[in-house]
Image 1 (tube, rainbow, N blue to C red):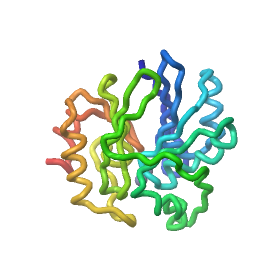
Image 2 (image 1 turned 30 degrees about the vertical axis):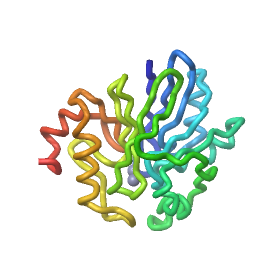
Image 3 (image 1 turned 90 degrees about the vertical axis):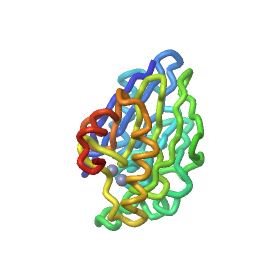
Length: 210
Ligand SMILES: [Zn+2]
Ligand SMILES: [Zn+2]
């Protein structure tokens, strides 16, 4: 059973997800957006020990909390990222473009690949490569729980921006069509910004997909 706590953090209100498998007690952070100490506090309050950090992509607003989490955990949880976003990670996730500086935290030690199965206790999450917003963007799909952590690929009524370095509109639309709209309608989409939605709702109402 997946237990999910959403924290909306940082200058662009990014959703960080604390995700636990209730039966095993295993916990990951998906996109530690900012305020790593606050994420740690929240985990501690729940009695949760963070064992991994998974990044949907390397934009600074999705990883600026990783450094503090790494400092606050022993051993430091390894960071997982798709290799096509390593260049972005090395450039502080594009923070300098916005006049910001961040510490991106520990160098990603786990390479995510399309089709890879990640384990969270008993649960399995499938990695799907969804380039377009960034070249190395991935989503994490838990079929058993009918939920996708979809980062900045798709939002309620909108899609990820493609005007930043490495972005490409047609590539993004193709990723959404092949990796998201192929999922069952009732699948919950937990996005990097804004409220959650479902595949079925976006299939009908998302103005970018009609
Ligand atoms: Zn982004
Ligand atoms: Zn974002």
